[in-house]
Length: 347
Image 1: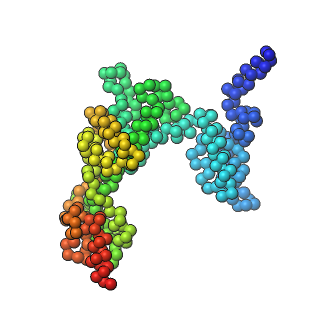
Image 2: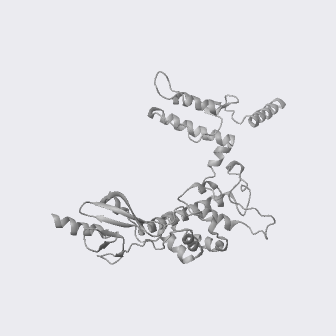
Image 3: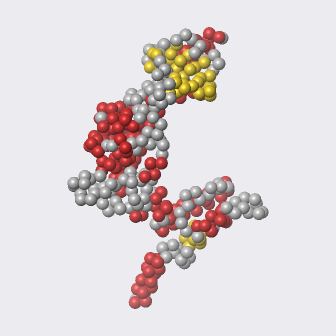
């Protein structure tokens, strides 16, 4: 009995010392040997002299001892795809077991406090605005530090794991909310950019040219022309709220009615049911919103080119038919004009 107890204790000690033990002894996982990462990479980068292909088959016999973001940069042969998928699943389990810090950082990407969003030119900084709103006032908590950006960025060492008020789950939920709001503003920005562009359409030659706006409001026409059917379907409808610069984003986030319009226009369907919650969230932190937390990498400048109403419906129009005298068209009516004025007329 004492012997059994001693064996169990020894077994437990070995498990603690060598968490990669898997019926094969230390240094193995799922029946495969764990080798230094640089040695494993060397195998995958080696070309087999007989086949002339990379040694992917040989690499699948081992696991690297640390996380690699792109494990097979040269691709995987079709006949090894199923085996490689199983290998990769086991490999991530190993990284989880080892609590690898690099792998741990990848599990933070959707967290509100992860700074990787700062690298994207498509985002406006909504995550920083929400994080700022969650920070407690200096008067409430002595020496309170900013919570953004996270200084850990390792899910295995997350300081919010055991906190009640601001825990990991809430940070990931708010991270998804921030991304959804960013995309809603991106939709408004994209529409505004299209709205400020004039499209000179030559329906006879089936070509269209974009006329953009420079920083001083002057028009600039690119030499490149596009086929009508390729470019005009991409022209956006008029944005309910123009979003051209940081000031527009800032003002929209602090006004509930304006924010509601942005969300109605641009939120993906799965988040529309959360619209009221999102508005309440931003209204509760609006006094903490700062312009310096927001970014618009390419501000849109208002066009000084005179536009007109759509010749057909009298709505907003920025498609100019150069084949006709003073004819402007909206996104809904350019095809009607093309068919009736420039197709049927020549058949």
